Length: 324
View 1: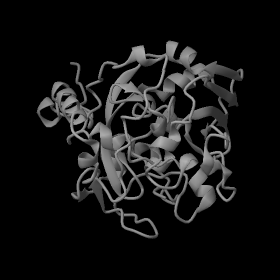
View 2: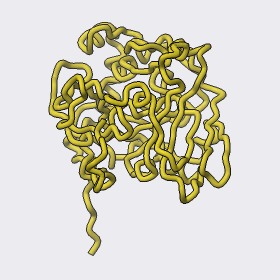
View 3: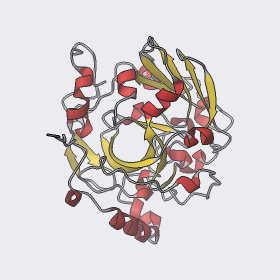
């Protein structure tokens, strides 16, 4: 007898905002002045999000991709206006209001390098990469180490597909990801006290997990610059600082990568960065989180609600600082 195991992200239809309702709500919200929407989000949030100058993205015809209904959550989607205007992207500034500055980020040409412990190092133009994968939409929880959260419909493809293209050698244990480096367009990269370029990494087991996604779009459209066009990394059970934007290089290695924030302040930010409500950041609690767009605080879930499906990755590692 075939027994189908129900996965934790497979919520009943009744618990999820329907796609039709979401699309209708999005159209309605676009007709409302952005300032009135953003005022309730957080101090300093400004009305310059998804309505930035239109961009000529050659991949636009790939969107919207079909939603994979295996990946959904039991709370409403965060509004597009908020999720695309309340952004951390230190290359363009240390505040959340970096949308206008980020528009300098070029969409094309964009080349991704696969190197290190691989059968053959290669460079792939982003549009050639997109021809080798199938895009889908997944709804994921997103949790920032600053203790705010949102729910986002990402478009992308499983990272294991990129691993298959790279053909890593058997000795490769980690993947190191690196973002672009160009101080002429990214003023933050002129600040020499930061360890540029932004890098981070994960184990091969994490990279090939079902939940790990390389995102190319958001809300049924290509990623805008402020959200990490044209390629960013998503692991929904980890804090957001792990989720590198605007990736240009994947290096397969047998050495554990030291990420940007770990290099900057290892006491506060480490390699694993798994969400755990019982382990506080040195300067604040992680027991609750604020849903973006409201003042509501809700309990933080272990591994951001995905514990049942990723917990086995960390068995026998009790001595590690898994949640830093």
